Image 1 (tube, rainbow, N blue to C red):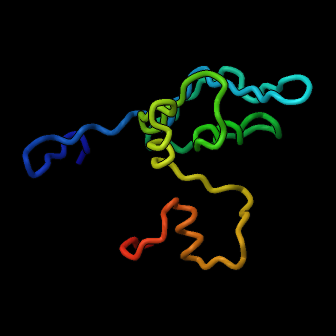
Image 2: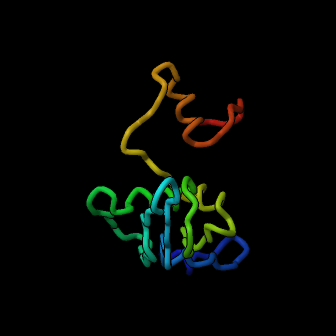
Image 3: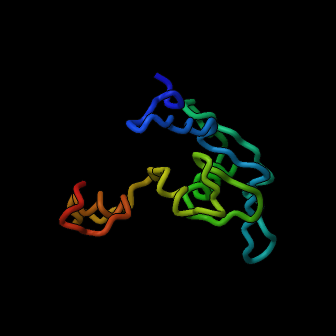
Length: 133
């Protein structure tokens, strides 16, 4: 059954899911610092269709982590546009962050946290007796 054709209890059809999971256009990131500014992303255009398997490969310093960190809202872009599940990163950064999950390559965790506390921290939730992890 296709989502766009699924009728609700009221008889209305559900909206079709976005065609693109991720879409970036002209995405640029320049790190300014001491000395010469460094361009990590230079007008990147990328569309990742919903349901596809995608790998982001490249040598060290190619901008892979910068791209992911921009989409995760951890790094501000210099220029361009980015959308995740048709949510615009500039207009609704919280919506984008809520729509994705990022697993870092290195886990920097305190060994004294309980598994429940770690899950609550990673999910962005606050301890709440009615919240189940």
